[in-house]
Length: 191
Image (cartoon, rainbow, N blue to C red; front, side, top):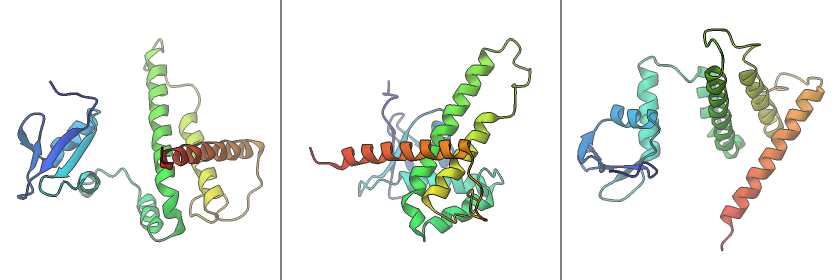
């Protein structure tokens, strides 16, 4: 029985075939996508060199899904990602994306808990999708504070009058960013 807490190790042979070390059989990209959907972490390594190829294969899975019309990433997001590789935004984009997906997972988890505790799950959720709207405002404030003039960020098209809510959100984002930077500093310090 494999340890589900450890990443599933996939080895890429010189023939470019992918080998699942847990089940001792060959797998496809779609199989790997299925493992990930089931909640498994996956690590793909080159058998000969030992190089970690995980990022390359994850990007390939995303590209194949997008190419089949399973569009998750809007054109504006893809454009901003490309733009981030050539701007000073490159350093904050990974943090921003990680925080955004963490918030999304947390929001989905809370929504599922709320639905599970509703007397009638078919009833509409009270109020608008406030979690999604809050996440959108938080993302815009984060981008505006980190990268003035970032397309799509609040304030990118002109100065807006700050509200108490946006100032509170901005202060919260700055606090979270400072905490993340402190954690990163601790990780980078030699013991």
